Every structure is written in C-alpha cells, then in structure tokens.
Length: 96
Image: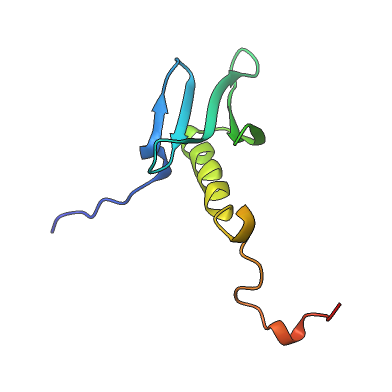
C-alpha cells in the first residue's frame, strides 16, 4: 500500500538568502522568517519570527517552521487574533 504523504509547514519555507527561510501564504505574502544562527563553535539555533516579531528559538528548522506556522494559524481569528469564545459556554462569561 502506498504511503500517504502529509503536508508540513517546512514545505512553504523558501530559502534565500543563504541561512534565511521565509514562509509565505497562498497569496505569496511573507508571514514569517527563520534565520540560522551559530550560538558557539558547536551549537546552531533557528530564530523564528512572525510578522517581524521574534517568537522563539529552536534547535531544528522543522520545529521553527511549525512554531511560525502555528502563530500564523492563531492569527486567523476575528480582528487578527485568537478566536475568542469558540468552544466555551458564553453563559459562564461575566457581564460587564
């Protein structure tokens, strides 16, 4: 039986210049960048940024891509933020 291939955020990462990857949406707009950085003589880290803001560091390119893409998905809610109230009972919310 043929193995199913799964999509991964690494597949949208475009390298260039060397050591820098950009993640683009369906409209070819850059939503994140990842830069490789040498910490010392033996360690390498990947700096993950979403829309110009550093959101963390990773030890692998794969995890860095996942973090940037997860942030991209979180920003698809109302007003560009997390989807508020989905999965909660509105009756439990305080009335202001």
